Length: 359
Ligand SMILES: Cc1cc2nc3c(=O)[nH]c(=O)nc-3n(C[C@H](O)[C@H](O)[C@H](O)COP(=O)(O)O)c2cc1C
Image (cartoon, rainbow, N blue to C red; front, side):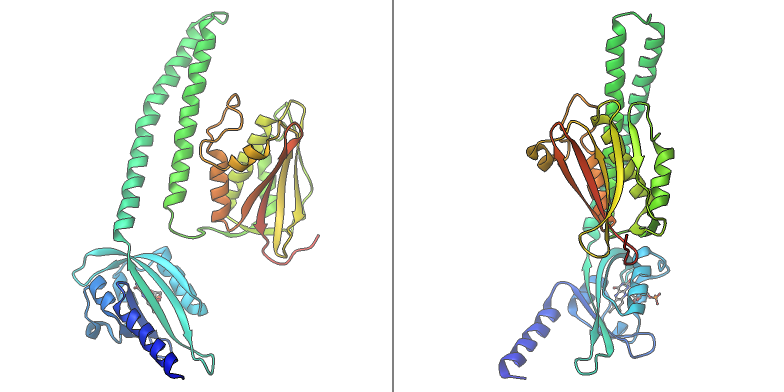
């Protein structure tokens, strides 16, 4: 090693010792993968002195709370010799709870390639987690407080609609009040879904192999494929096509896109689902095309912005596509759109296939 390299090594080691984060090094060749080193950051975060933890496995920080999803992920990552980041509940020496974002990574011997150690960087994210929990509680309370009076409004409007003669001019007004109340309920629901997605700290919870034909098949039950005004065509898909997804979330995405296509297409229009290979190996494109009003380039660029609605005369909250994009990204995929005013729109879902797949 040259003099400069030695100096740089010393600086890196010094920086790791002095960082506010906790640093832990565990020996993977010894039984029980014991801690062999911790820095001052670890001592400050956990309240334990180095001498009290050297020789123990880090799991003691979990107490009896050792079945958390983050712990399970770390267990699996260590078994595979892979890196992993998890946010877990841990307990300080005085028994108090703190949220620990642990980033673990394997260290291999430079010459033999053998896995010798694991290192971890720990960050105390208790304040962030408490703020997220507070936000979630507030949103749930607000949603409840908004939903109950809206239910009353809708109930009374329905009563008035029944009591009013059919040809009474007030029927139009009552129908508008009912529609608007429905819209607020939809808004509250969509805002809650978005808030929940944003508070999830897990990267891709529930993502697993999903058979595309099964999900597309269920679409028939979730929304009538022929709502009487449109023809919905699902091109045949090979049953051996499995994608990496979360079945219910993918279903939610498909229902959302289908109901959009129905809302924006003229009566008698054909809505078509099709599957094509992705541009890259290991990806597949699931598209839904409608012969609807279409969108300008400017509208397309704002399509995934909160509360943007291309047409305010068509019911919608302006959050549906934001949720769809968020759901797709959570599943490790993404969504694109192509559209032409007066011709129609195609939304394409890009999903990872489970194994290399050819048509
Ligand atoms: C270097 C390193 C540091 C770790 N730091 C923590 C930690 O700060 N908190 C924690 O709950 N788990 C931590 N773990 C995870 C546990 O040591 C252990 O891998 C996890 O509990 C799953 O394994 P088990 O099922 O054998 O307990 C760390 C793991 C390694 C390899």
